[in-house]
Image (cartoon, rainbow, N blue to C red):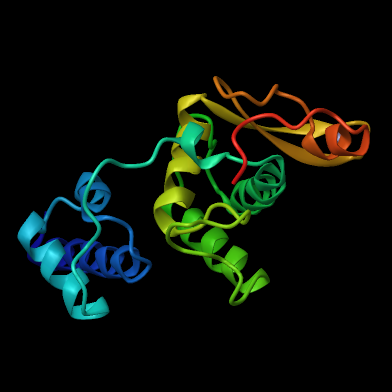
Length: 183
Ligand SMILES: [Zn+2]
């Protein structure tokens, strides 16, 4: 690699790190993508932007995100935006630029309504960590976006939850029994 192209790729990674940390992606996830910055550097950048320490602890699981049937409608919306924006096969890859685009677009649709921290509202993903986890689950095969011929919309499913893998819009219309813990 020439000096210039090394510099350019370094700059690109720095820029991506900034874009991810600006959206409060936890540093343990950023570390998986950005190799040229040390964990200490990532935490420093995070602190410089937000004037607070980055969130630590276990990365949420996709199963834990879905607590109400209504949340599935929002997750379907987010996942649809992500899939439309993506330039790769999202079942085998993650498209970082598309995740950023979908999250920004999703936030713009509900300004002031997304509760970023506990207690969360029905709108999920509630933060960029959750957005990341959802797209990762779609790649890993533990979640999927499918088309409902009944209401002609996309619906979101997560395998291994209390919610059966059916269209939640149609289930609500048909007065299906509410499952899972109340939010
Ligand atoms: Zn449906």
